[in-house]
Length: 541
Image 1 (cartoon, rainbow, N blue to C red):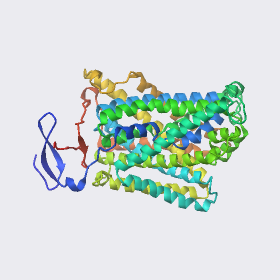
Image 2: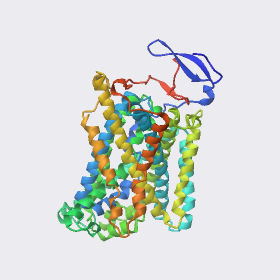
Image 3: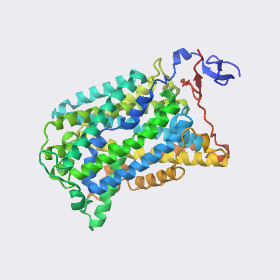
Image 4: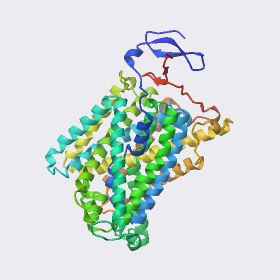
């Protein structure tokens, strides 16, 4: 291979002692490379609590109102199981090949290059929208202390600059920031769960031992949208919980974005994936269980909070439980934690969306400039473009108000998460079949889940059904709620156009199982530079 003005042939020693020759950008010192500086403790903490935000602290109250205590628990348990199975599917592929560009590359390698293109841009769209969702949520939360809506633009500006600066500082500081805030969120959730348990057992100032009273009185919502008969209303109320739970649990798949910047990624990612179930069970399902034990579905304070959709601590079921039980002061503390949670989630989603654009550029499916990283390992141009989209948060200053902006953007991101989970499951199904056809043993996998292959199939089928019925409430309102319908399904035509458009232009085909690249491309101590499909190996000391 001859050299060119843009590339030099550089020889590097691999760990096996061989000399490996690869195309490396001529000005690698200017191009920079990704830094594997995220420590295991940081990745594990991000996996457990990184995207905990308004979905748990505020959205769980809406789930209780819609589905009742039993319906809410069933909904969160089902979606939690789906997400857990999805993460185990993704985890097998990530740990086996942490050099890959996450599920973006897996979709292209194991299914169809056109699907990789569609999945990559869909995930970028999903996460680039989610960052301003959390910024809007944070600005609403501040309204708990400052009700002057004219100040909202100031708060949005401060929040946006804050998450941009954290991401700009480099992955080392990003990891430490998320570690601290994740720790705060975990401690707060655990504290709130203990408070709920004490309230339920009659240890609060009101001395009311609730037990499972509300489970007996009103386990489901029999009046959902005034649907008749009651059995149908109960089922539809339970179904509404599924999309609420999908919003709360969305973003976990973003863990794949940190593969290229995690130290010792195989060990780190294996531990992080296993931590996902702890997060789902302890921080979501158990929280919904206790909320349903302490708070009645038809509690007037809960119904009023959801009707007003205030978006601050007054809407949190935890605060309503605390106030009903006669405990004081905690409302301000919970609101402060909700604020930090929203900020932290926005920070992580900005990280995920900038890295997804970087990965698309690495694959040659986005302009090459977005694959350029600076000396601290930050994809600087990718981050700049994604930060510009954070300005969508200013929609909260429009005539529709912050609540409408938040609900619109939240619906889009919920559907995006469901589509991404489906794509991950499809990629794993094809990868699993490729192993079988090529006679490869799963014993070579560094992380092997007992949930396969049925786990991936469960995710694909379940998510497809939830996606199809995602916007059913738009048909139950009079007049027809076309805005909710559009936001509930807008991602679907977007993905279809991306897939078939790329397929038509590039003439791609579904990858045959016998020809599928089922090998791992990861090399220990390697880092990724800004050129497509290049791994630049660290030189031995």
